[in-house]
Length: 293
Image 1: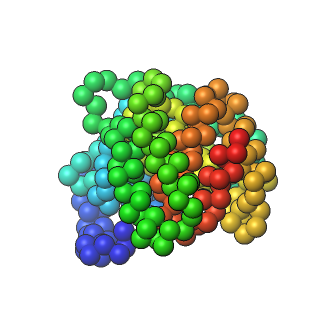
Image 2: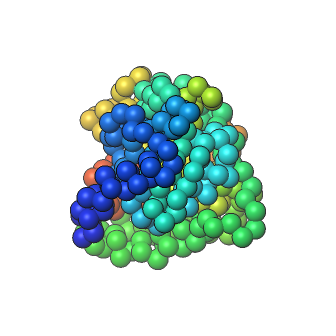
Image 3: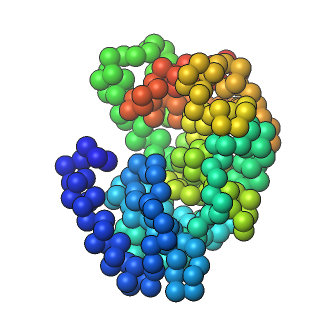
């Protein structure tokens, strides 16, 4: 976002926009902004009744365009509850997750238990005329740019893997199971400890597709490790075939999803999203490991 020509203008507008929304919604800033947001600005606030909430200002972006609609559809069941939404300001007012500890701090077993609890609750059927992009359309978009991105990156992996992923992106969409609301970027940094429910999802990039797709987002992030706090060290030598396949086996078993389709979507997700990642070699190797099972 910061490399976009309009980024600084947007960032400079935040204090004024926050002040306007706080006045309109009778809020007061209740602490420093949260760190780590890539395409949004979030700050703790309290309303006139002193309820702890979060004000989120979004950078206008296609993948998060319907975040408010997704939160409204989930209605607090497995996800943070949406309180108010101003589409013109790209602003959301949401419940605050307290204590707000990220699922990255959990052990692998604890994290799998959490996913097994809330993923079925997120997988709601959406009505006809919904605003969400379908997984089929998203996959078609990935397929259309796959070879161009591979070539632009200097052909960083074998042509046979590229062709295999292209085939998956062509065949998987037309053979999907029940179409439900899914979180495209479901990783443990987007899951927070709360009081109303043990864990609540935030920051959805919603799609409508089969639930098996969500396994890939979890696997791709590598942010759930075997021991608390060890997650991001996966990029420092702890990431290996055994750990990837262990996460895959535990997730697919506990979620009671189709193992083969979960694997295929995960492989497609790893490769489709690898080209703008600093960890392209890690993602490609993970896709290879998954194709072995």
